[in-house]
Length: 422
Image 1: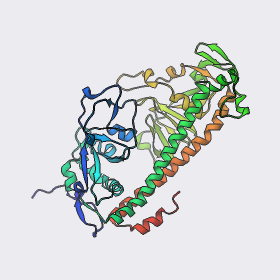
Image 2: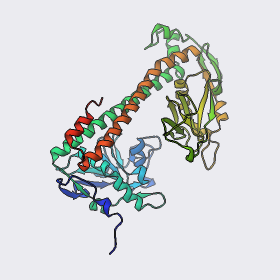
Image 3: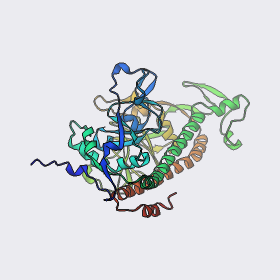
Image 4: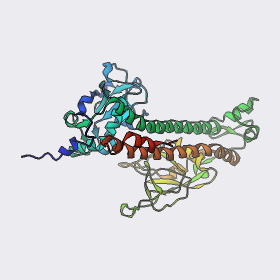
């Protein structure tokens, strides 16, 4: 007799009194199109691939002006499941929140059947994720894995009454909704800070207003007095009177991050910041926060504001000294640089800090930078608060999800645990 090593993966735990059925029978699963290069254009609707599910629409998103059957169209609120890719990082369920586009292959668009709640089904797929990731990993070749239609058909799941489905989904979705609200709030806070930086230090809106005899909008008289009322010519064009032109290293000094061999990593509260961003915590730190980090090797162009003490890894550059800037000014100034244009590597993208240090830069007065720091600091403190709160909410959701689905925890008990969530 041939033993199937995956057999246990097809029968996850559910309460005994929940009727069983195949996962495939709980919904319709519309796979996306296999787009060819000839389909792409400069404009048009985005082609929604796994990269867009994970990171949203970006400058790298491919677009097409072609029209396809409406079943391939993706709209806000559609439930999508990526079933192929790197199992641990690609296989997951998503609710689309971007612009209308076209569904790429390796992604299902899901419509639940009448007796299955959409919100419950989303939580169900999250509960089944470990099983699906294991199935995909067992088929993994060259770093990629997938789950097949046959896998979805073989997965036996429990489906309670609609009332129970809605009760479970209500608890978990409330946590998801708060996490999403925090995410949108953080996007707004980031945009407010970027807009203020651009207005003050790039477009010089306040100087333009005063030069035209107008009072700068959106600031008190004390702040307005920090800006001159005329421009002077410089090698970078017209700049506010009293400001000067220098180099980026007149504002800040970048330093290579520190080695931290894997065997020396001890779990702890201090984030380790790589070229791709903060990762798992470490028991020690190298730099007092707040700090600013960007990529030195591997990934270029991402800039991170780290409010707590941290360990910048050797793939990163961190701001060792804020000379004529503060952490928030430096963070937003570095975000405006095109780091890819200064790539000094061949096989591996690499940034030479001296190239960045030598870039010409308008140097504002220290008073205007200090005032900017004071205004935006509360925005980033609120942003950090939202991040911490969302992490707590996600941990609670991830604790409740398997207990509710397996029957280990009853709905009334889960409701009590979720009480008091902000």
